[in-house]
Image (cartoon, rainbow, N blue to C red):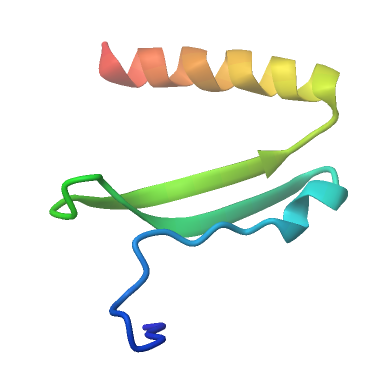
Amino acid sequence: ETDFGLGRPAKAELVSIDKTPGTVSLAEGRDADAHAAGVEIGVVLPEAEMARFSSCFADALEELCD
């Protein structure tokens, strides 16, 4: 519902989560054509844990799409 007089923002970035490993952020996302809405998920983990998370997340998405 944020409006600074220029209309509703197309995207908001949460930059403060990068200092706290294990943090997850959720934000409303919008497709480039502005007709589709979605959710943007931000995850902060140490590098090795991020690699493992990315692999598991990709595998889970693949299972959902099969």
